[in-house]
Image 1 (tube, helix red, strand yellow):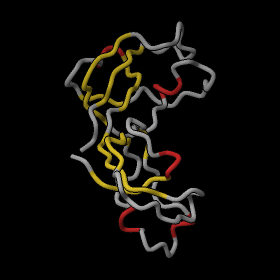
Image 2 (cartoon, one colour; image 1 turned 180 degrees about the vertical axis):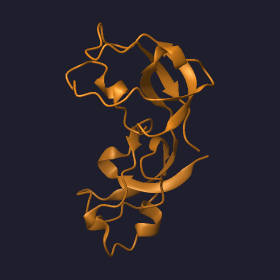
Image 3 (cartoon, helix red, strand yellow; image 1 turned 30 degrees about the vertical axis):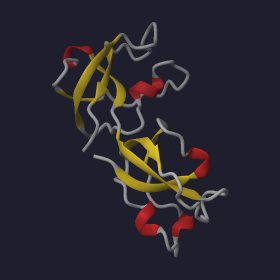
Image 4 (cartoon, helix red, strand yellow; image 1 turned 120 degrees about the vertical axis):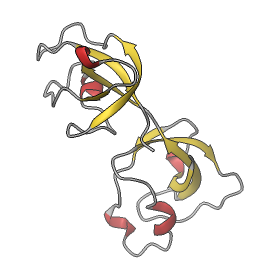
Length: 148
């Protein structure tokens, strides 16, 4: 299901994914709040289309203004314990990882999924991008189903 929202003009690209983080301090008193702050915090979204012929609106947060786009919830790529990595199963992330230099870090600590929640695996993608896990975890790269 798509939702119309406002996003900074520099970020308004079809296919761009982002995690909605909620209201910024510059949003206080904005007349467009209801059109801009209409997404679910912590959810990953993908821009599916840009509203053509829509006006660029002034914004205290985005220096070049905002424009209307259509977004939909997007799946989240993540590393999960291999013994639970089956399409259709519910699984939680393995836990926090302090090794930010690891090529798998973005999947072990993914934007749009929390450690305190179980998510449904939409697809098993295979081996994670690292050669060795510094925490000695046996992990598989999966795609969590988009939140609805």
